[in-house]
Every structure is written in C-alpha cells, then in structure tokens.
Amino acid sequence: MVLTILAVLISYLLGSLSFSILIAKWVKGIDIRNYGSGNAGATNTLRVLGKGPGIAVFLLDIAKGVIAVVLGLYVAGGDWGPVLCGLAAIAGHNWPVWFGFKGGKGIATTVGVMATLAFVPALIAGAVAIISIAITRFVSLGSLIFAVLMPIFIWNIGDKPFTYVWASLVVCVLAFVRHRTNIVKLLQGKENKLGARKG
Image (cartoon, rainbow, N blue to C red; front, side, top):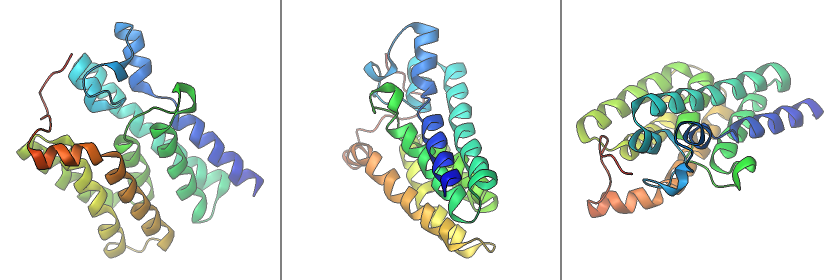
C-alpha cells in the first residue's frame, strides 16, 4: 500500500513537469500559457514556437505517461498500480503542482499511458486519430476520437483487465472535459486548424 501511494505521488510529480512551459521559457523566455490558445501542450507549442519544440514537447509528454505506467507495474504492481500511476501522471500534466495547477489537456501523456497499458488498441485508435487529423487538420477532433475509441478497442481487442477499461473510460471523460471549449469552437466552425500559427 505504501509503495503504491509513493508510486502514484511520484507519477503525479512527474506529470507535473510541463515540458511545454519549460521549453518555451528556455527557447523564447515566454510563458506559453500567455500565447496562442493559452494551452500548455504540444499543439500550442507547435503553433507558437515551431516544429522542433512542438515535437520535443509531444515526445516528452508521451514519455511521462510511459514512465508512470512502468513505475506502477514494477513498484505498485497488480492491475490497479499501473492504472493509478498513469492517471496520476495525466492529472499532473493537467494540473501541475510546479506551475500553479494550470497545465495542458493531457492528450500526449494519455497516449503514453494508454499505449503502455494496451499497445495494440492504442495503436489502432492512434492511427484512426491521425487519419482524422490529416483529413480535417483539427487536432482536438483527433484527440477526442482517440479518447472515444480507446475503451471500445480495449474492451474488444485482446484480454486486458477490466481496470484498464475503467481507466480508458476515465481518460475519455477527462478528455472531453478538458476539450469543452474546443468542442464549442468545432460546432461553431471557429476551431484552429493544424498549421495555423498564432503568436
């Protein structure tokens, strides 16, 4: 129990490392949350700082999710350990203790978490999401599609513990909550498309 609590706490603190904020400070000396969409994530970093920093943030945010789940697997153990650690990392990204609890939307970290928990379902859901982004150029739409497909694919593909299905449902709800303004913009036809650069 103590090891599980410790692993979850470490995962949250790891998730709280907002690479979007850190890289923007390092590259431009700015707070990324005051530019573009105001979101501390890979997409806004891409728009404001360009491809290099955007890709770096995306990969590092994914890595946070992977490390958290691995930590859960080997330190906490069981079915719940990796799930709780993965969710803690996503929570840390969204509400980082190091940055006034104002972070990103957690999709890249979610990708890392879900790919480590259930690789094949995440791979298929990710492929569908990427295709949707390529066609529509709406990253938010692709992110929501990924979130919706994960519980469906985990339930139907392979033999994963029900705790993983539960985790994917929580992640799905969280993704929609964090993207509520994007959903409104999508419905109004005002959502920013990938490639639109905002300073």
